[in-house]
Length: 183
Image (cartoon, rainbow, N blue to C red; front, side, top):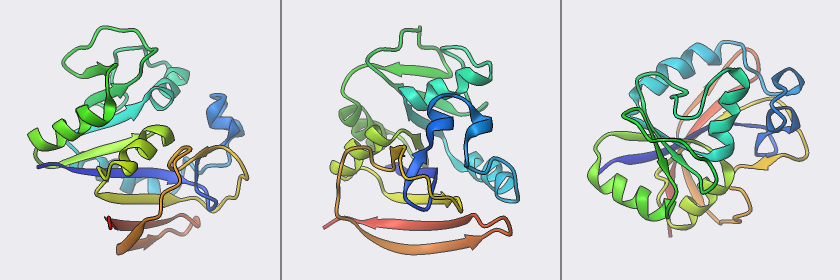
């Protein structure tokens, strides 16, 4: 059975995107896209066998020249969850327009290794509600943005977390890793 890991950058107030990211204006974002945490992140994502993301997360790559149906991360199978995107699935990128929860539950049963939930907040919220996320890795940026896309979208869950690792970077980013304990 595969493990589903929500590995995502957040602000101190637990938003995964500020207005700059939402609007595709990366230069207006307060999130740190450079620094010592970036090479670690690029190495860490190699451990995953597939990446899962919602429409908005996938479309974010379009601002950097990616096209529908193209992978955002080379070498990783992509599962994109959207009812509104339209493109032909291929060997690298599969568009899932049906029930994301059922699909991911089945994917976890069939696969081995680690699956990376890259974003978005609403998708993460529906998965946490159904107890499908196993681990949470947060790249906590030293910023407070007040509004944006919440970590779990509109879902308000009570969760107990077990801290299994913590790394601090000189630029102020901290990276806690939690095992999620469902009750």
